[in-house]
Image (cartoon, rainbow, N blue to C red; front, side, top):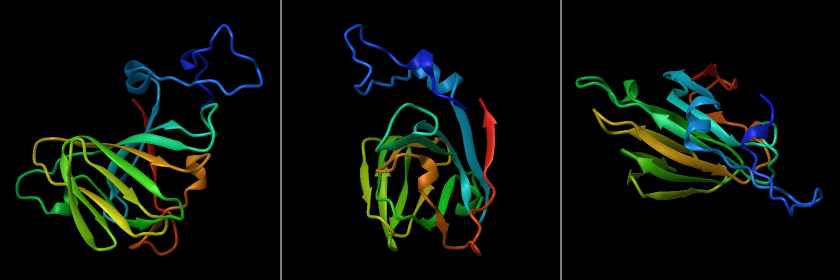
Length: 171
């Protein structure tokens, strides 16, 4: 997946040696960006769309995207609903909750989150996310201080060393 030239807005006064803004419309995010995710108990049931990552966009220093944890059905165990399994990575991370309610667990402390909540997760802190709703997606923006999503090495607590299977699909 290359740079989204059509989504990069150039100012008529911009100089080639200056960084340029990269802007995605809601339609760009919905129709163009690749949906990725996990769908297993060891890693979670979650999808995401990476918005900014130097391997995909003409950006640097930050990697960001939008993640979605689907609701679970009545009577299902919590692990059957949307979640991101306990993991850690060297990069600090920020979550901003866009929609829904859930639990963000950081170093074994559960924090209830809802639309408008923001969470800072220190580098190498074990953390996980769980949708608590039976009816609504938990949608959150994530951001790392990293040039590329490829630079963020996830280490899952339940993993035996492998990162796990990551599924991709275009939406």
